[in-house]
Amino acid sequence: MLLAVGFIALTSCERDDICPEGSMTTPSARLEFYSIENGREETIDASSLKFYGMAAGDTLFSSSPSSNHISLPLDFEHKESVFLVEKIKEVKDPSTGTVIDVINLTDTLTLKYEPVLTFISKACGYCFTYKNITMSCTTGHSITGYEVLIEGEPSYGELLSSRQVVAKIYIDATE
Image (cartoon, rainbow, N blue to C red; front, side, top):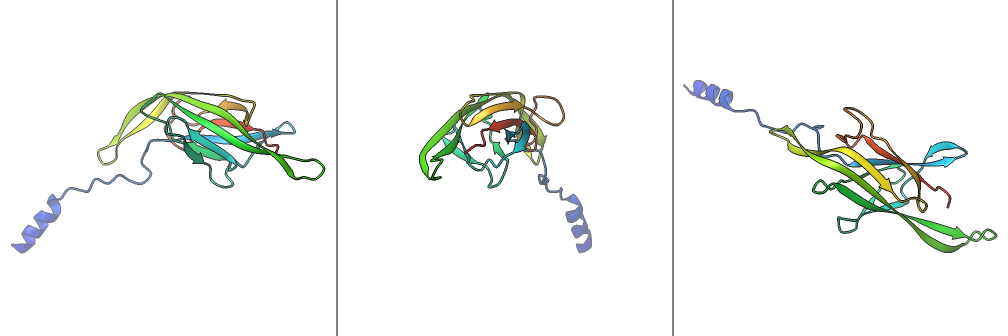
């Protein structure tokens, strides 16, 4: 009798609904940084750049040390996210090499998109993905140019994973 009750208890339990590791999550916009040197595209260390989320109460986002990219969160409650990009440039005396001035170079980066609520599973719930992504930014200060480039399937302009590169940003690498 005890064996029968134990068998029924074990076989009547439902499997736990656990969201598996590696499941889809709301992606961030990955930006990669480059400079043009001698006519060639070179990756650069973006750790000296600072990003401020303009709608998020001026939140500071930093790239990882010695990294050529940053992942910025997109505001799924709105159809755009605006960031202030800041680079500090030191002006040095050519004869002595001492710093004679410090200049804040700033540009504004705007990402526009359509947030899409996506059902993943009962265990994982929902996440947001983004389609029809466009980007614009001011140039001439810290940013010298940019190229919107959303890699990977399923189609151009859809951001489904934080591993996808949204844009290449070209930075003035001179100090």
